[in-house]
Length: 282
Image (tube, rainbow, N blue to C red; front, side, top):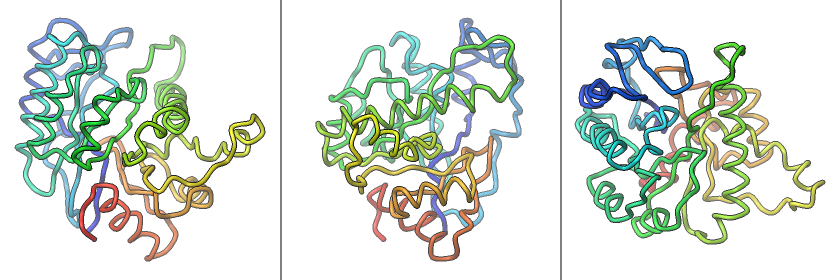
């Protein structure tokens, strides 16, 4: 039975909260309206029940590119609360990452939310990790999940542009910022970066050339596999080792990749490593 640490599922309560708004982000029927982007037609089937065969756990998270976490608190919290309420009611094998408001940080509110049964906290890669929030995670021995955040509109580019350029750049910046700034202050925090941290770990040679030093592999710093395949996973394993690579699909937008490295590696990526990340028993 595998673990998938990265899925999205819009529950009824979250959809209703988006439809109750008249300013971006909001839903007009199933048309998503965001600042600076053309209307996007959401496929309702993407957020219906999906196949979870052979999954021990599937963790859903808030769609951080919507920008909800950066809204003023009086706008952010109703959407976050609606996401939390719906996510906690999902049937097994679903679980969820908590979300929080970054325009008015509230550690006590995060603590209360985490104590309801969330796997940890997701933050957008564009957010400055707040020490008060990370302290709450460390106190509970729960992990942090770093996910791409909002991408500024770029006129005249193809539809795949945000996923290939801003999202990857965000993950690079978040990866290097975490190691340079956050890790020294939070040595016991487990963290996972979406989409293999945008392949940031593969730039170690350039980091060394620019005086950043190589350092040692951080055994508490994980990367998940969504949107990549065997070639990228193999390259990351060569740089970081297999013990910090975990399975993620980004469903419904993609499927979990086959690592293509044999049964032992697949078990490590899909079962053993995610369990360690989440603090679950082997």
